[in-house]
Length: 261
Ligand SMILES: NC(=O)c1ccc[n+]([C@@H]2O[C@H](COP(=O)([O-])OP(=O)(O)OC[C@H]3O[C@@H](n4cnc5c(N)ncnc54)[C@H](O)[C@@H]3O)[C@@H](O)[C@H]2O)c1
Image 1: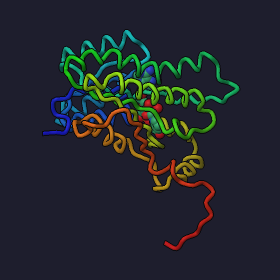
Image 2: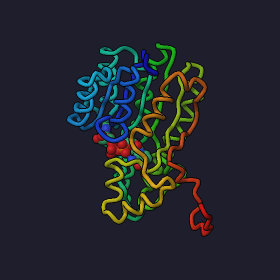
Image 3: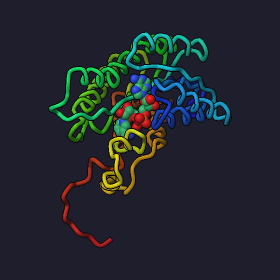
């Protein structure tokens, strides 16, 4: 028996990077997985890999997470196929870096819609099914930008801060229904998002060198945490912000201490 046997999990942004790793690991642990992405071709490939490799059971949907209509349709069809959703992983997101002076209202709204409104409306759509099932785990993917951001990520940082904050409010509101809500704050995880953020070898090397463990995270590193939060092992874990950053945020910058190792 898998750690998620009996669960029905909806994972957004499952066509690539962390979402793909989460969908695969959750299926392997026994969940029925509703995998969605705005890029239908990519998410279909992920689902084919899961189903063909006997890694579990999954369905692919085209889904723009910023559209309430899409959410209603995907959730209705997913529930029809697999039964009530008991795990929601709000993973889809965009980085869209823009410097402060060039940040327009249009850009701000787009980033907020895809990264934050999407997660709220996803919860709103799925929660009635969790209430009916009497159990639920919602995992909202924020970012370490909540605690440590850098230039050009103003809108992104604001959107992830919103995710982290409303997850805490939702955890309290939903606790009486046995629905847990946690946010995950990944550090630098090697995906296409990071390739876009560090487009040349020099900046990529510098980003790796800044990691205490001497390496970036892998999508599966985050997927292991997500599986834990989705499982009944996390029975008493709600309202938390789970930083997973390879120690990036606790290192002292500019330290000159030299110690024999
Ligand atoms: N990679 C990192 O270092 C890092 C760090 C912190 C947080 N995150 C967060 O982790 C999550 C996953 O990022 P990733 O690194 O796997 O990135 P990624 O770019 O590899 O994957 C993101 C996926 O989201 C999908 N997507 C984008 N817009 C969408 C929309 N409107 N509707 C539905 N799907 C959409 C993309 O098609 C893609 O498949 C994001 O929320 C991101 O902000 C990433």
